[in-house]
Length: 218
Image (cartoon, rainbow, N blue to C red; front, side):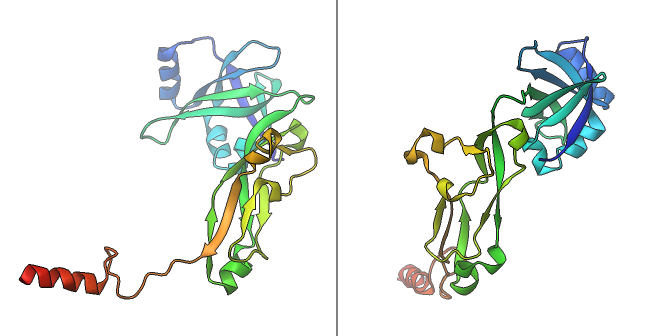
C-alpha cells in the first residue's frame, strides 16, 4: 500500500462564492471529509502536493493520511470534480476509514507478461482487456495498490474471469461475493483479425469498387 499524506485546513468561509475565491487564489483545493462517527467537515487541501499525488494511479486506491491543521485523519478518495475544459480540480470528497472496518474500493487491474504471452507472441493472437479495475473489499491495512494478472502462458481462446485472479490475503472480490453469476470476464485472447490486401481504407474490396465503377459506366 502506498503512503500518501496531504495537508489541509478547515474552511470557515463556505458557499460557492467562497470556493470560487479559493480556486482563484490557486493555492488550495476545496474539499470535504465525511464518514465515521464525526460530522462532515469542509476543508481546503494544499494544491501542489494534491496535484502531484493524483498523477500516481495508486493514489486512488490507497488510504491517505489527511493532516487537518495538525490532526491526522485516515481517508480514501471518493470523488474528484474537475473543470470541464481546464486541467483543474474544482472539489474533492474524502471518506474517513476505520482500521477495524472493511472498505470497498475499485483498484486497477495490471496485465503482465503480454510481451511473452504464448497466445500473442507464438499464435498471433490479440489481447482484449475487458476490465481496467476490480471492486474489492478489505481492511484498510490490506488494501493493495493494484491487482496483477499474468498472461505469460495464456493461449488463443483464453478468457480469464474474476475467479481466475489471485487476490492478496484479506482481500475479497465484491462481485464474486454476490454469486457465481457475477464472475465477469476481465480479459480474453482471440485470433487477430487481418484485413485482406484487396480491402481499401473504407473496408471495401477492389472487386466491389470495380463493380460500382462498371454500374456507373452503364
